[in-house]
Image 1 (cartoon, one colour):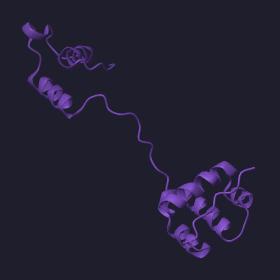
Image 2 (tube, helix red, strand yellow; image 1 turned 90 degrees about the vertical axis):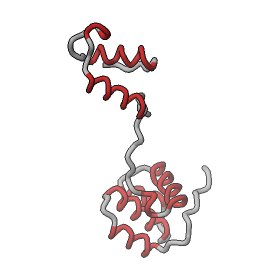
Image 3 (cartoon, one colour; image 1 turned 180 degrees about the vertical axis):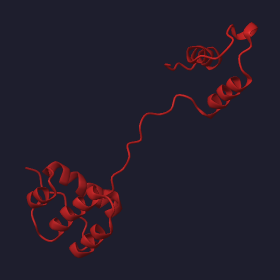
Image 4 (cartoon, rainbow, N blue to C red; image 1 turned 60 degrees about the vertical axis):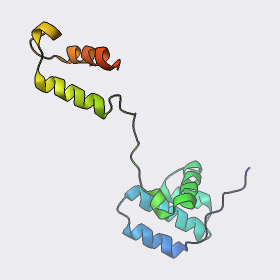
Length: 130
């Protein structure tokens, strides 16, 4: 079994609990209380049991706490995938929609999603689904 990762010692258990009292995020409060348990001399198993998580999650939270402090334990939103269209593509698409289709040029009398998708491919070679 590997040695436990040390928790940074520039925070006292009381100070971490004070952060937990001020926190608005319930998950952050649980993680801070687990860290306070460890800093107070409790075992990591006690911290995991007290916060209702596994030892691996306690380990991950200790790493985040060591790197970023109490603010690092806030629940963060996942970044999601990168956008396919950049600002230039969006502007060009908005301009073409505002101008409306020219039947002789575009072959349609009103824009449909599939036609705009095809236009994006022809203009920029950007492939998106409808």
